[in-house]
Image 1 (tube, rainbow, N blue to C red):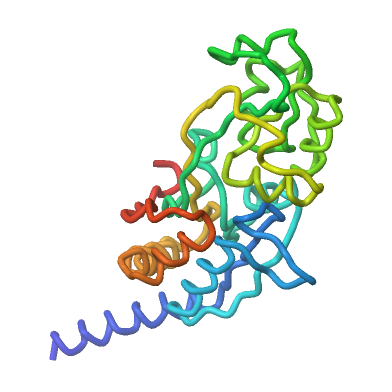
Image 2: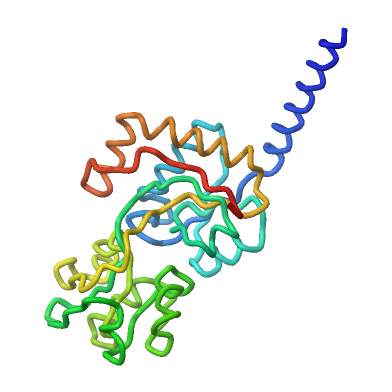
Length: 259
């Protein structure tokens, strides 16, 4: 009898936990940052969009994916629970605000210049007093270079704005993740060959980021779904489709907020 009561108690706790998760749907947020996430005729597409939708199907989730400017998306993620930003890089500051699952993509963050600019950079100090540096508002580049070159930053709300400024010589440097450079340039009628990476700042890994206060059980569910999907040939095909390489992340981890 005692065992039966204990079993019933455990079932009630589990049902309550699952009900709590179900009653608190995520606000799933993307930004216009191709090829990770963007829109064609208002229809979401991109690597992180397709990945997120696949995981949603595995988890029987139906939350819509909302597009917001990065600064607004980041602000919501820092101020509300149950927010998922589907493509974010991880740093120490953000580890106190988000739980990260991934990586889901890997590349590098670098300094780009026009192809006819002969400057050679050995480190970030080489940019000091050499011209303005275009960065994306509240992005990783602004956080990194704001510590070393705050007076040289030219902050824009969209990557396309900074790319235009670079090619019009209004800024000399463009700090950007290489994953998004080809599509961003294509959007303004230019090609990847019009710029070159003058310096690689650091390797870059992109994660799913869950805001502080989101159910740990829910985050764990997404992690397990990603682990399972990354072992399939369908995932390899998805990564190849968007990044033209079979070298993809395959051992996603969960970094809980505050740890």
